Structures are given as structure tokens and as C-alpha cells.
Image 1 (cartoon, rainbow, N blue to C red):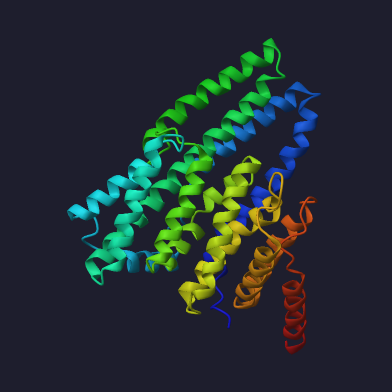
Image 2: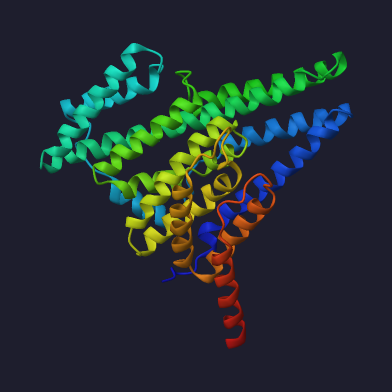
Length: 362
């Protein structure tokens, strides 16, 4: 079953992924040349920081996406945090995001939060279910923003460390001037962006908490909203392509878990649009980071299961949307020599066959 063709609704994601791919491979080429030519090092430094700067300005959601607007309206509820139990749960989840995992109080607070969520869910009362939904949804949004801010900071730091290890006195002065201008702008953006990473939490910790929050939300029966929020985190998906391998592994686990949840979603247009956004946002990361650092992130069984989910999801799309997704997959799958997964050759072959038939019918 295909959804209505709406190329304009997915065009921003397609453009983002295309630009990201070009930028990644151009940057990899510049790294080698920058070691030899100081001018290229300046250019790489300026381009990379400018790219991260403007990426941080972009909203993670496409605000003119009618599908997202409708689904967001559906999720809006009242009374979640207007009660004592709602405020208590909100405070617990906020503390969890601030307290380091190494603290002995972390597990205490997390256990308290799980107990409150589970007790609310066991009660067959709509108001308590709404408390769980609204508070967990707000926590996911806050954690997504914190993780995005943390990854931007990590990216900036990595570029600056890389440049400072090779530059001479004259180049140092030039880059310091660039950095001074950049820091002024970053300071303003820091306060403008809501819920920045002010707590100093590690990105890996935030990614692990996103997985936990998503699991709790799905256990409470609100899986569609969890999937929608992850599908709409397009900025985070972009940044994940530059992340450290350990962080990429954590994000692959979140993506794989939420991709599997799409099996239980319906075939209505809004659900299909959510699945399309999931593919366009997170399929590149699956292609590039599934091998992990020491061992593959996913087991063979998990990989096979997820490949099946991806194929089923792609088959539900219209021809033009299948072309966009498969073109994106082919580009990242081909240019990532370290991974042969996900293998979507069967979906690609089916799309080619269907395209030939359409051409013959014209």
C-alpha cells in the first residue's frame, strides 16, 4: 500500500542528507590535504565550524510538515504536570538527566521513577496514563535537545583539537580570530536554544536514557509518539554521522529499537509519513555505524529482523518515495566499506522491476 505522493514534504530531509553526504566525504579528503597545506586547514576549520553552527540553528522538526502538525495535535493533552504526581515524576526524570551514572544516587532516583511510572500504568485510570504520556514525552524532548547540544559541542571540540595540534604561530592567530567571532555567536545561540546541554551530561549517557525513556513510553502504550519524536530528530541524525564510534553505537541501538516498533503502526498516511521520516533520518547511520567499535552493535538475529522491518516499510511507500529512500541507502551503503548492512538489495530490485512496468505502461 503506497501513501500519497508528496515529494515536497520530504524534500528538506532529502536535501539535508545529500548535503551531509557530500560534506562528510569532502571533509575526509580535506583532512589529508590539510596536513600539507595550511590554507586548506584554515578553509576546513572555517567550513566545519560554520556547518555545525548553522546546523545548530536549524529546528529538528520540519515545521511546515502537515503530517507532523496533525500528529503533534493528537499528542497534546492536559493535566499531565498539573497534579502532584505529575510534578513528582517530572522532577525525578529531570534529576536522572542531571545526575552522573557514577553517583550512587542515580540508580535510587531511576528506580523511584520506574516505580511511579509502573504504578501509574497499572492503575486503569486515564488521568494517570496521561501523566505518564505527557511527562515522558517532555523528558524525551528535553533529552533530545540536550543530546543535540552535546554533540555539537563535541564536534566543535574535535575540530579545534585537530587543528590546534598542527597549526603554526601565524595560522594560530588567524584561527583565533575566526574562533573569537564564532564564540560570540555561539554564546547568543546557547541562550536562545531551549534546554541546552547545561548539565554537562555525557552524550552516551543521554543516548542510553533516550532508549530507556522510549522503552517506558512504549510499555505505557504510547509507542507512536516515541517513534514520531525520534523520526523528527533530523538534526540529531545529521550530527550522528560525525559522532564518536561509541556514541554512534548507542544511537544505532535506539534507532533499531524504534524501527522495530514501526511494525505495530498502522498504514494510515500519517503513520507512513512517520516511517518515511525514520528512514530518511536514520538509515544513513545504520549503514555507517552498525559494526560498532569491537563487536557489531546488533546480533545476527537482530540484524535479520531489522532488515525485514526496513524492507516492509519501504514496500509500503509510493514509487517516488521508495526511490528517495533507496537512493539514500545506496549512497551510504556504497561509500561505507566497513559495513555490508543493511542489505536492501531485494527492495532495490523490486523497485527497479516496478519502475520498468510503470515506464512500459506510459
